[in-house]
Length: 193
Ligand code: ATP
Ligand code: MG
Image 1 (cartoon, rainbow, N blue to C red):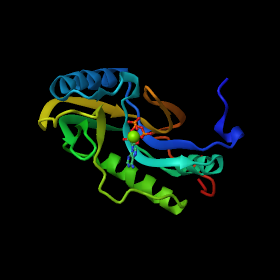
Image 2: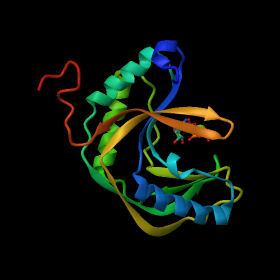
Image 3: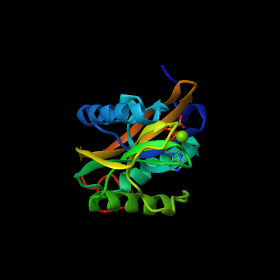
Image 4: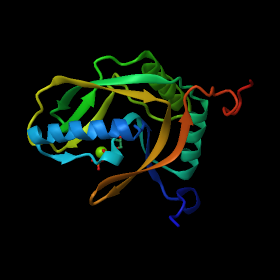
């Protein structure tokens, strides 16, 4: 059995994310192949494709408990995210699948998450949220930014994920998942109703 970070006192590198189901992951992985043919670099494995909502970094077991409390207090509603463009960033050489329109429930989720993180004393991202799924890292060339056949992703919840760095790239472990549409009332300590 793997050691539990809460028991060993070790820190964990964590982030909040959306994780696609098999169909959307497969479509994104195919798009990754197309991008790789154009730009080379390191392709994200199918099972590790995700969309980061908020990156936290290294936390102690105590702070991990605080993050779970944050997730418990954040309400999410189900929504569809249409991934319909390919783009890249020169500064970190990643190529991503993105959305021309950020759905209001997604923007709201990120806003509530950042608000709850800040209230709990975590540093939050100040740059505007740009929904994207990383398809390639260390791309050799820049991708030609373009619209692609839309991938409609029905999002039904969010997760707190641990990132385990290995020589073969990052591996991820879901620590906790929250279903959208369940309402945060019962699970948020200190809230009534
Ligand atoms: P690797 O670092 O091995 O290339 P990775 O970037 O997926 O893999 P992490 O660095 O642990 O693994 O990052 C986890 C997630 O958080 C990724 O989606 C990554 O893009 C995002 N992330 C990492 N650092 C930051 C940061 N400083 N700001 C915003 N998002 C970040
Ligand atoms: Mg990284």
